[in-house]
Amino acid sequence: MEEDPLLTITDLRIEGRSGELWHPIVKGVNLTLRRGEVLGLIGESGAGKSTLGLAAMGFARDGCRISGGSIDFDGINLRTAPEAQRRSLRGKRIAYVAQSAAASFNPAHKLIDQYCECPVVHGVTPREQAEADAFELYRRMRLPNPEAIGFRYPHQVSGGQLQRAMTAMAMACRPDLIIFDEPTTALDVTTQIEVLAAIRDIVRQFGTAAIYITHDLAVVAQMADRIKVLLRGHEVEEADTRSMLAAPREAYTKSLWAVRSFARAERPPATGTPVVSVRNVKAGYGAVDVLKDVSFDIHHRRTVAVVGESGSGKSTTARVITGLLPPRNGEVLFNGKVLPPNFKVRSREELRQCQMIYQMADTALNPKLRLRELIGRPAEMYLGLKGKALDSRIRDLLALIELEPDTFIDRLPSELSGGQKQRIGIARALAAEPQLIICDEVTSALDQIVQEGILKLLDRLQAELNLAYMFITHDLATVKSIADEVVVMQRGVVVERGPKAALFAEPKEEYTNLLLSSVPEMDPDWLNRLLAARAGQ
Image (cartoon, rainbow, N blue to C red; front, side, top):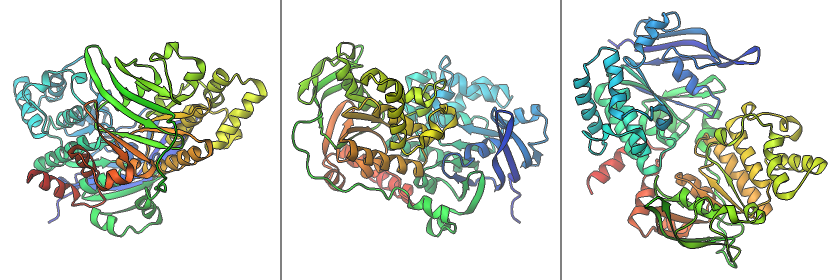
């Protein structure tokens, strides 16, 4: 006899408030989940994945409401149950693992205290037993020094370790259901492997049901038993993972499978004076050296991808180039001329020539300013444009990033999608008419369809405007798409650099091999083979 479902969602409808009106977000979705089963939820940004995941807890975020349908969790209707009953389930029987562990932990409390809070408050175990349980789960999550790491504060561990600590915390009460909401999006590929393996192992060990939300198709292939595809709040299709990967039925699903086909044609080797030269740079914070003798060049109309796991020195190198972090030794040259090490003594013209596009467009754009102000400020500050000339320039830039000027010029950032916000970040960088743009993880928070659109846009702009790019990323699929040259960093040292094709075909260093082998593939058996191969080494 088949086991009854743990979670049944029927004809779920969720609305979001905009002004005085309510608009549909989730439009009649059905979902069934049994104990020990992992369901993958995929779809582009705005599809309703996270909203549906939270609804599985009987929860709707601020500005949203569950307007129809039923949510049945183990015989309890979460739509009609009293709030006190729903609260008693959260943490104890239903747990949630957020995308950003760093934003979810309280920075003022040690990891072990935050782990123990839930089982103690819910009366599951006393404090002493909760601590012992934490050490065991930290061990299962492959955290270093499992009996000591819990006594650190969140800022004292790496991003990957914090994500694993959050997964352990979600397991503290041995919940029946865990919702994983993009838990590896912000992690580098080597750390991601560790976290994925740990999540999968612990879910299997405890027979926990899980909803795994992601826009990374290769990741969901490793984690899910079944996959459900969403589009603008509608269910597109659902099937077991192998069937979905091998033969998706719907055109939209097929389009998801086809993304990341973009790859720029190989270009001849760079010649002439580089736009930027980093020469033997040593830099750090306080007494700690983060960069150790870092050197590389970036030429006109070339993209140099700087890759490496978290803490390798990628963003610190960008800070040195922009003058935010003066180096202890070495120098940065612009068109063959040494730049002042500190941005405070650089001329306005020197500052204009290097602009940045940031990872999190949500936090990089002032929410109180309209797009004409956000884009117009650099054009006014660096180029002295005013009045009609400034308005014309703003409109030209909006057209350049493929946003209709009359429609968007007076919008606020809150009125844009994630991909549109990132386009505004690009326009703002272009407004100063720089020669170099530093792209810091600019696609990491975007779904794969939007990612591809941003990469194509950046490629077109580079050709049209003769731009040089420094691309900081942990996404090697992005590197394959857009880079001309690759700089591989590890612990503040450049371990390998060279043309993209040569580096991917014949990496010379063991660490580069490790990075390349850690890129997930659209094959449900990929993670098993990788872990088996590494265990046999």
